[in-house]
Length: 259
Image 1: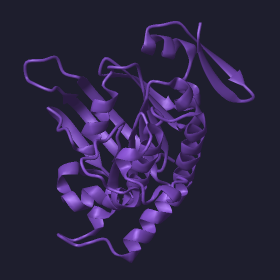
Image 2 (image 1 turned 135 degrees about the vertical axis):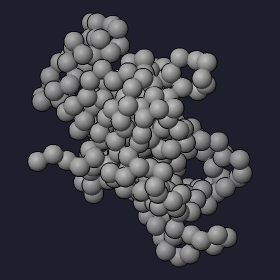
Image 3 (image 1 turned 90 degrees about the vertical axis):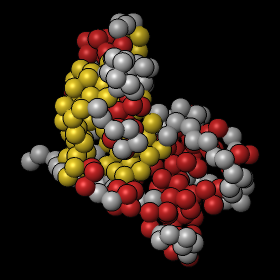
């Protein structure tokens, strides 16, 4: 039985201006609900642009985006924000928010105009911090955090939003080995809760470690998409990265290395 699509794009093109070559070229793709999908490709292949089109920050120049089977524009801003959240690579915080104040921003889609977060919102925000192992930092100003701590706090804000679909742009970029492993465990926990996750990465080993589905992208075009274990072959990855790649199977796990 096929899995319903949480997100779909159909004939998608995007360019930053009419006078430049499109960044995304005719993409058609279904993101299955309740699974983890990796958008995998080299730097400059259009991964972040695709993620921002999926989120709605960027509007396609051609084609359409469907959210839970409906045109994305048919949702109100509040409905959309309750359904889908983003963890960016880096986020500028213009004020000296404390960690808890910043995570509470994830509750905005559930609050009315000028409404302050209540006890339920604080509880959800604190639970998100505890999930990431950051509750001890709740009073610290966000600008005083390390790069890795700030990345985890950004993920906590997205978890407090409680979205059905979570988009993550290079989520391990600023994390050390320990926190990277912790994040993978969080992603597995969310997958067990049927939260749809889509993340970008240039690291095929990260896709192999966590993704159910992998989408190979190069120069704004989808080369292939399918179950991760079947898709990550030496031939496909060599074509994606334009470099010789070898794929090994070690104790049932996939390990990708340069030749």
